[in-house]
Image (tube, rainbow, N blue to C red):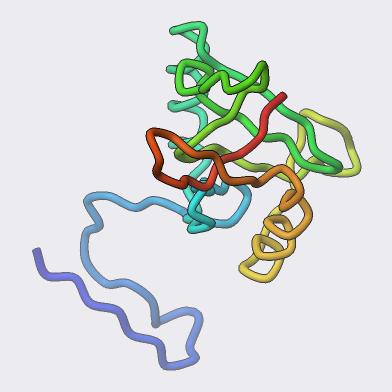
Length: 138
């Protein structure tokens, strides 16, 4: 495949030239955050597919923290002393002012701010003498 990108500040003649087999947006509306504090953005299609898969398996969990909705896999929860903890990753979206069915775009700075906003939910747990970062669910 012969594809090339030219940007010469000519909106009519620059851009991609050639066929594109697969394209995907990672615009920051949908974010995956790990309990190790790392994150990545995913496309709306990926988000919808994974949420649907969790729903079909009846494993979709939801936690609201301030203006954020956290979606997670309930089968991954650990019960420690009567509280549920998640070790792994989860989806985080910010609820738009229009309501819970619409999400705001999150840029890099917004994602870091979101992590700080939900930081009170992060804790450490000890499993077989090893320390792990975890998200307190309930």
